Amino acid sequence: MPADPKSRFSSVDDSPLEGLIGNSTAMREVYQLTRKFAHSNASVLLMGETGTGKELIAAALHRLSDRASGPFVRVNCGALTETLLESELFGHVKGSFTDAVRDRTGRFEAAHGGTIFLDEINSTSPTLQVKLLRVLQEREFERVGDSRSVCVDVRVIAASNCDLSAMVADERFREDLFWRLNVLPIRLPTLRRRENDVELLVQHFLKVYSSSNNKEISSVEPAAMQALLDYQWPGNVRELQNYIERAVVLAEDDRLQKSLLPTAVTGNVEAAKTAVFRPTDEESLIREFVFSRISKAADEAEDLHKQIVDPVERELIIQVMEGCNQTQTKAAQKLGINRNTLYKKLVEHGLAKQNGKG
Image (tube, rainbow, N blue to C red; front, side):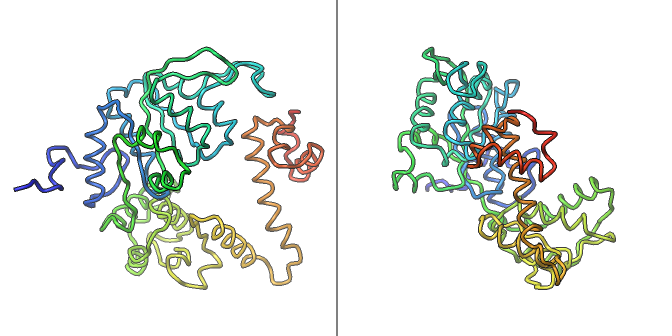
């Protein structure tokens, strides 16, 4: 009689890993796979929607591995342009491009003896995929602008919030790289598939944020809990975490009330005026942000453009300047404006003094 597929990891501990909450069947299998795969040097591919905890599993794989005493280096491949990402991953030598004023060690080299976590691997370009394939095959690479090879001993854990096999079929991701990454796959379940984990997570985040906000919120109104259990959680655990943190901040007594939850969860139109919806798709995020600002503005307001656009522009400039090491020329290029225009905006937003590089 063939063995029950569910029993294939029955000898492996399926208790929750440090830093993860949940006892659902789907999560117990993730815990088992993580412990089973931890001591291998083979590549691991973590798949799952945004907010399902892929980085936590990557960290657990490293922590439980024989490489635990080595570095654990994280790289968000979706946060950088192709050129910047190549330099970030492999490093560069002085003079290899305009802003390369000194040699720089890349993340692969920094992870030598440990683990590198490549998040959002699905966002990498075809050119970079070729270079990643070589590292996985030969464990060597060249820094940008250098002809000398660097050899590394690194375990690769990659993560994707898209179906890489579908991307391979559409010729948007290299098939050979996919198979190199997909040696040991772990699929993270969505929160809507995790049975009774929502209640456990609510209690956990309630305790965490009550402590950090010097409050003592010890219970959840039944109607509030039911709304949380009924919601489909497109943003998964991260979305739940955000909503509980906000509810704790707004709470005025020791109970989490349904009125503290956003309209996305409760379906209450009136709650929209105070709720902050944090959806996963950009169009909804923009729509809800604008709706929230308009709802809070006075009826006679005649400066909605300033109230809504200025904060976004200011935050955009701050983040781009940080990403460009406060270099105005580089930031202006990335923003698609000239340097004089950027400087005027820095002055307008009160950022000129703290952003003085050329």
